[in-house]
Amino acid sequence: MKKLLSIIVLGLLWCNVGHAESKWKIEEDQKFFQVRKEGIIQKGDHLTFLINKNDCNKIEQTFTFYTSKKNSSIEQIENTKVGVSTLGQNMLFDLKYIISAEPSMSGYIALISAGVYPVEMLLEFLSKHEELDVKLKYIFSDFENKAGWNASDFFDILDNKWKLTGMSEAIKEAQSKCLK
Image (cartoon, rainbow, N blue to C red; front, side, top):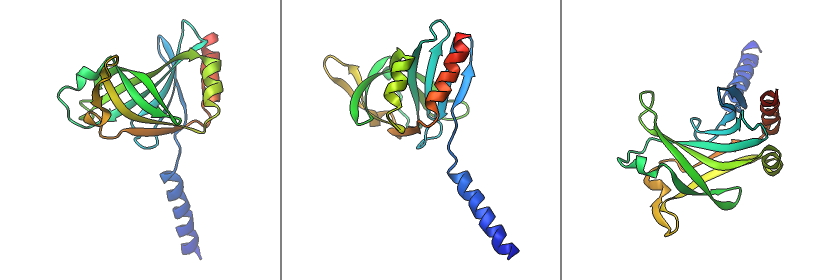
C-alpha cells in the first residue's frame, strides 16, 4: 500500500512539474517596468510589456523569438517590418533588434514590437483572449514594394503562444508602482 501511495504521489508531482505554467514577472530598471512571461512552445521566447517611467499610462507590447538557424545575413532584418498572424488576424509589427545569444547559446534573438498603446486600451483588448498566439510569416526588406523574405529563411521555430491568465493584474501592479 505504501509503495502504491508513493507511486501515485510521485506521478502527481511529475505531472505538475511537466505542466507548470510560468508566472508573470515584474522587473524594474532605470527606464521601464517590465511585465513578462516565457512562451509555451519555445521557453526562451518572452512576451513583455514595457511601461516607460516617463509615461506610466502607455505600454509597449513586445515579444522575442529565438532562432538557432544559421543565416550569415540575419542582421539585415533588423529595423524592418514583420508580417505575423496573431489572434486570427494578419498584422504588421516592427522587428527592432537582432541580438546574438552567444556565448550562452549559438543563435540569435529577435525583439519585435507590436506597438505602444494606452494601458487601459491594451488591457481591454487582450482581456478578451485566454492566450496570445504569434506566428512569424514574412520579413519585409521593402514594405512598399512587398519585397523581402519568408520568415522561415531566418527562423527555425515560427510560432509561440503565451497564456494571458494574470496578465491584467501584473500590468496594473507594475503601472501602480510606476505612478508612485
